[in-house]
Image (cartoon, rainbow over all chains, first blue to last red; front, side, top):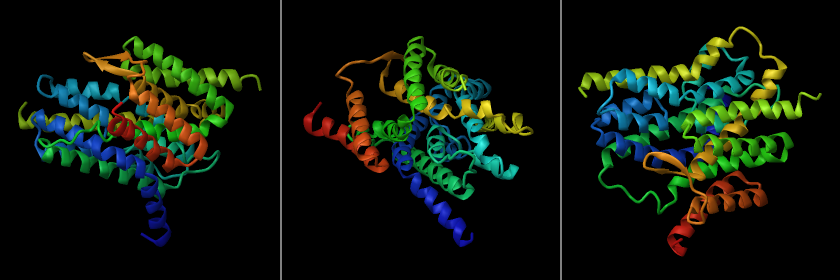
Length: 229
Length: 113
C-alpha cells in the first residue's frame, strides 16, 4: 500500500464508524440466534464472512432446523433482491474501475454500506476505490466480530433495549437522509416512499414492499420533475 | 441438520446473496447507462433509505407479522423526531447519530419512558 492508498482506506474506515457501532451489537444478537439454532462458532464466523447479510442470516437461523439448504438459499435470495437496486444505482460511479475491483467491491454491499457509499456520490465523478473498500472492509469486520462475540458469549446477553442499540441504524439512516431533503425532488421522493411503504408493509409485503417502493418512488419522482424538461 | 448440510446451506446462502449483488454488473456491463436511467437511479438511495426507516420505525412485529405502530408508546418514533431535529439544527453527521441514540437511552433509562 502506498501512502495515498492507505490514507484513502483509513478515511473509509472513519466514515464507516456509525455502521461499526451498529453492526457489533446487531451482529452479536445474530450470533446468539445462530448459536441457539445449533451452529458452531466456526460455522457462524464462516457464514458472516461469506454471506454478510444481516436480515438474511437472522432468517436463516429460524429456518435451519426445519428447511432444506436449497429452500434457505432461495429464501435468502428473495430477501436480498434489494441489493440489485444498490449495485445498479452505483454503476454510473464505478464505471472506470477494473472488472475485478467491481466484483470485489460488490461482494460487500449491504443496506448500510450502500447508504454510506450513496452519500459519497457526486455527479459525473468516480468513487474512490480505496476509500470505498475501507468502508466495506471495516463494516464487514465489525459484522464478523459481532457475530463471533454473540456466538461465544450468547448466554450472557446484556439488555439491547436499555442502551438503544436497536436505534443505531435508524439514527444513521436519518443522518444520511436529512442532507438530501434540501433538494426538492429528493424531499418529494422521501414523502412518496413513506406513503408507499406504509401501504405495502400493511399489505404484509415485507422486504418485497421495500423493493417495490424504491422502484415506484424513483420512477414517479422522475416523471414529476424531469419529464417536463 | 447434519454438519454437511449446514456447510452446504452456508455455501448456497453465500452464492445466492453474491448473485443479488453482482447481477447488475453482469447485465449492464456492456453499455453505458442512459441519462434517463441515471436520473431515475439517483432517486433510489433516498427512496430505499426512507422505506427501510419507515419499515423499521413505524411498524413492529406482532406474531411474526409487521403491524403499524403509530402510538406515543412507540419510543422510537419520538427518538426519530428528536434525531431529525438534532440533524436539522446541527447539520453534523456524527452529532446527529450519537445524539439520536442518546435521546432514546435518556428516555428509556432516566425518564423511564
